[in-house]
Image: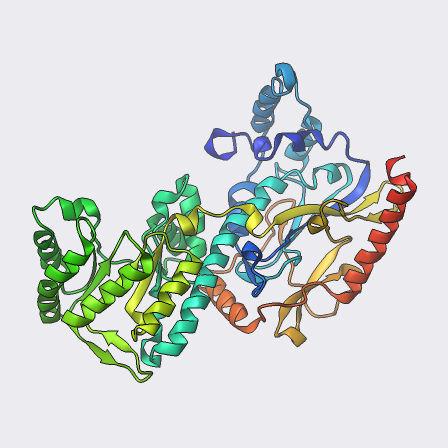
Length: 510
């Protein structure tokens, strides 16, 4: 079999998809598109989102060559998949046809926004089409293509965290220390993932913005698969509770850590027994040693109130390590800092940062770690990603542009027709969707990434290039932008009114 995990490729979809080709109307072509329907977590103040992860889906799943063995194995599965363990319908003839006639490549065409693009609700991020006898397969791979929701959501979450931290950096950090910003959010999420693949994809999405990561699956994937061997992710030696409690005393544990790593940056968790007492009794000894050796000691609380724990650590460190006042009037602790990695969210991150600045410390004195909150506590509904059919050309040559507009679910209204996406100079280059037939003359941002097989000459951008694109667009684009052209909105209303009339007069149900 050609599929991953011992699966035939025909099963990389939802069951009901296999039944659609037989009932799809005969057509010369069909077109569908993908979009995010809402901003991340319905944030009313910032509609920007990051589209990322399609490269992995295309190269790992969509571009795989199907074989007759895949079809044979799928047939055996489908033979007992229907209710009562009877035969489930699936398009065996079409599958065998493209195995023979298209070298086993799935017969759809995909145009997409480039990896790392900043998009808005209703930006078409993918456009999928199929022709002739394969028109009924246009959404067969919808489910696996929609899995880009996950790396896109992680990338957006990390960027939103970066935005919040950067605001406090601008207020409290000298220009000479701004380079530390990319290390302020660390990926602690490997153990929170359901599988290694999830950690690799989500961890890579985080690395589009930050460089700190303990998720080595992602660090390796980014460096050696996506970036030509150039490293992106870094980490530092750090302890866990098992190391600290293995010693008779916390002082012994910390001294051993400093013996081994004290000349560099090292993090120690200090709440195994009593965080406050560790700060009082152990930290002064650490300070004496660390200042002598020139290293940086990172205090990690792992329980209790987040704001209180961070401030306790900073105040204790200031007392024994000392601090300098930077040009913006904020304290910068010498040879020490605090990292909060327990239960961090976007909201708690802001509360902590505001408390840190209010206490007179620079934002560079505190870092953050996110585990399950970064790589696990997300779902497709956070940005409402969906694929919808938007146009069909029937056998007689009649084209019908289609949209969904459920009367009881206005949030699920889709766009009709075929689209192109263009940079809008009036919005600093933010993407705007147009009808393909009424598009500007400048280049379409939807690029061909799969054409019934790999596109000759197509190469994916390096990870460095994707990072640079995201940084540029997130900085340049407005938080809220007009994502759909007036012409397309007018056309959507026209199609909506026509279809609504058919609903009202009953012809849509005849």
